[in-house]
Amino acid sequence: MADHPLQYLVTRMQIGPENSLLRSTSESDAQAEQALLDHEAHGASIFSLFAVDILDEIRERYGPVSAAASAFETELIQRTVATKIGRSLELYEHGDFDSCASVLAPRLERVLRNVAGASGLTVTSSPDRRGRSGGVKGLGELLILMEGALPEQTRRYLKMLLSEVTGLNLRNRISHSLDDETAQREAVLLIHCACHLRLLVPDEQPLPDGGGPRTGS
Image 1 (tube, rainbow, N blue to C red):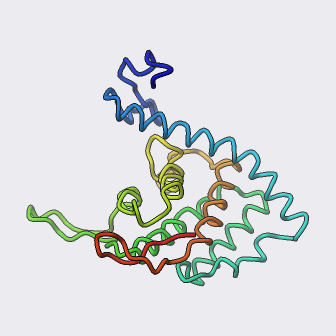
Image 2: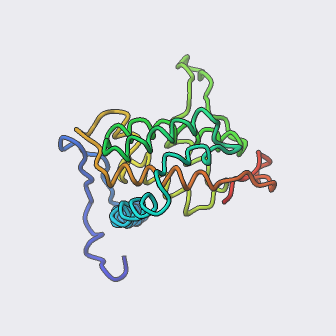
């Protein structure tokens, strides 16, 4: 912001699907946060180009990645979820990237809800005093609440990739069918996300507020 002050003197508009206004930022702190989000999303998009080649090289050297589906089963990833991750890998290897993403995205949310629960967070909300119904908390809300429960770079990456409306927002775009089709580069980022979550293990050290254990890699 110090190097490019003119960029932050005007209100910034973030435009989404069908020219909808996603966010308007004018205060310096909000501008700085959005600039960081843009940087993170740009970095992930560049990495996806390499990730496609990396996955191809792994398959050529070691065989179908989908054959290793059982390796995704951990304390935080149930066997049924690991099986679906394996199915999404099969779809990817058959070139059906859109179906791969459709199968994988909700399972990533399932894993993250397990991570939130293991961190001592509640994943549901009760009815409020005005009589509004309770229900499950949104993934974006949970990723905000998991600050301190996950390594910060991991938390920000997951939030930008899956639920941040001005990030890549893949979980919401897929679940709400905002795109005609999910591209290979986006599907491979979801696979990378699954591999990242596979490495998370509960930590014995509790959260500062007395909640459950942290989750680290």
